[in-house]
Length: 280
Length: 358
Image (cartoon, rainbow over all chains, first blue to last red; front, top):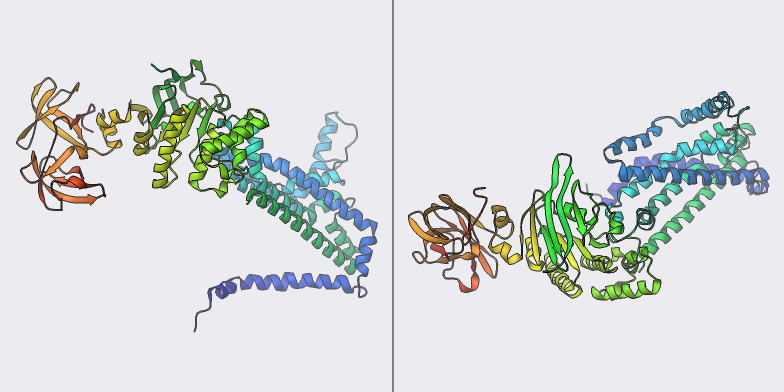
């Protein structure tokens, strides 16, 4: 039997995974596109309704706003964590990395319910505040945007920390030493020399968190309590409650396109950066 | 007598039980090219870090023109520094890298521009101002690192193995350039290296370190000719080490004996007493001749041809194999493995070591 060309042999290696993706992912996805264009009638009706509906517009805006706030929160908290782990952790570094990864071993569902236990009307936070006399009636800490963003920052934090950590690992301590040896204060050395080098990590962390947040379901559904309808929960409502497969599918396509646009914009931005770096 | 720019007194640095530096005292003179030479782990880089302010001393002090700087952060010391691996800032152009020390000192923009151009000229890199560091070769990066460290006209330039990442030929070229730059600028250079050739070729003075202590210091020629310890003799160049039994002694003049042959050894100022002299003998100080022509007879074991000279390993029953370096252009004999030869040396060739048998 003649030997297959190398490239072909490698294709055979990825074939099983590819087959599963095509049969169980790409194919149904195309089905969704089809439903959005055929249910209940053939044409662009679903898309017209989607763009006309103020409820849909509101949900999309809300989704982007929450994703944005979550991203900012994760970047600020995550940067500090990654910075400390990379530069000052010393021997406890593996432990700290493990602690960052720990949440991955607990179901998102459990983590989100924990926030309900904390933030509910008679949750731990309100109980403590009332019994200490700081407030008279319980604060509304969940079933609003605040609660959703807080819990989402918690869930998304590792996704921000890990890319930044990987990036910072590649930055030698010699740069900051060099900056200080050349007369820069600790802060200037950080701001002018260290921080610019961490931008690739920050950008990829931001992109990851933002994109994951756009389509997130469990946490906003539990912490939002039906009052904060992000787009994926809105889709669930359309399909499960109203059996409106057509609009639900059109919304899914809308979310997919919106996400793709975000990634395309980000990729352009990141490319621009490296183009600046490798100025010819 | 030139002024002292830096005075290091009893510098000690401990990491747990390990002494990275052990009571090192050293004066650095204004405008000199001082090299800290030693193998890895000798403390040379720790000493440079302590001078730069990155590694605070456990004990001891460092004075800059009489002012104690031991506790000052690196950015207040005003030393230029060239790092191993250069540490050029990858997000800045060459121009911005060189301008960095000037900008943090809040010099006016026009002055910064002028000074950066001067420094680029100094290292002959005028055409590369707008490049990014990643677009430069190792040697070019090295020049930029040098220009950056000199741009703010520091009092002292600290160099941490700046040439170690370069290939041999480039390294030799840059040694000449560094030396001529030093002579033109008159800035004090403190240079760390583990490469003896670098140390010997550029320095006004070499300080040899081992295990956190100064072994010996002096001008290159003196260090090479008169190593005091076996370590120095071995680290700086090549040496043969012999134990010579003394048969007679009269002041500086001694008579030693190898295998029934007596020969004189002079040791000016040598303090060694006792029956056996521990001496270092440089391979190039040993003459090779036809059998019977020189002092001792031996047999060539191996020859290594190096172009301008060849290294010959000669076996002798008593002193064991000796390394002899012979210029290829004036060879008395053409050595070949198995050839019987004789060898000998001048009276002042053996250098008596202080630390005896190692």
